[in-house]
Length: 132
Image (cartoon, rainbow, N blue to C red; front, side, top):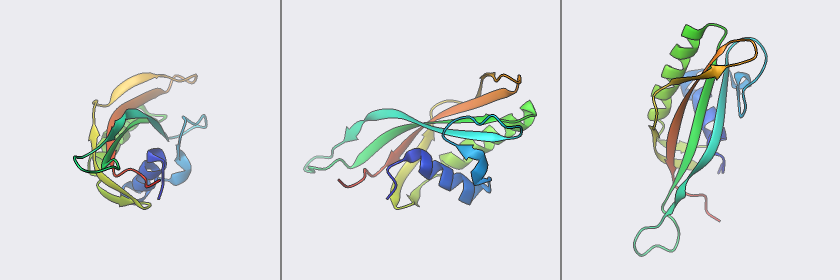
């Protein structure tokens, strides 16, 4: 079971979206061409159900950043990634995902040192917590 939502999102994008795993990282890469960064951030505390001593749902934040040499292609990629991740449900690397929900539309974040536009979108990922 993977404890990292970022790693699971990377696995999902490679399997379902056909993206090159070497171009998906946990931080924005500097080389030319397309890059997708998958960055995990805190969500909310675990959710406990009545009568359970273990949490039943965990909400984890995930930010996707996309950069491409062509701004229009970068926009198309982030829109496709948003669509793909919104369908992420089921088991990925041993972790059961209840759902994924985009909490922002794709937005231009900034330009990098080479003036390439970086797009981003934020998600909340709902999963069964890892058993400890």
